[in-house]
Length: 202
Image (cartoon, rainbow, N blue to C red):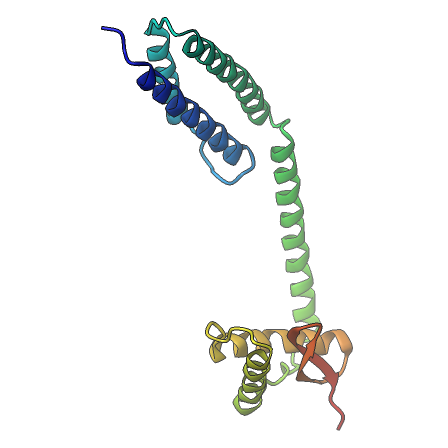
């Protein structure tokens, strides 16, 4: 008994949706979001298309849509296969860019390591800059939270511990950059609450 036309249309709609989801999955892999290509999903869609080919329908609209979907799958798979080959031989743009990025990262780490050793040797016997007192950091935190509250910005995710740790890391860098001891103050500029460093006199 021939299948009902509404069922045939529903099958085509479902298959077209699966094909587009497969296309999105490959794009996620090619863009670096996913680490593994969707080969299982591709095999499943292929099986669905093989089942589609075995169906004999007298509906010309159904046959036309089915033929269009088969052609779309063929075009997609040619495109995917070409990119997969490029990834394997290292000529795909994203792969090349990622390799260069990693190379720059390794060179930066090596440079930082060398500079760190040199700095240690140059500063041997010198004391490290003192950490800011808890009272000073607590006051900055309270001013920061209050400024965000006045601006109507959320404060629930701003914890004292996280902010104090961040400031303890940033203050020595600011002092090294400016060559003087600095103090921080909370300012609001262009609707944003931030910290500003000023030279500390005396």
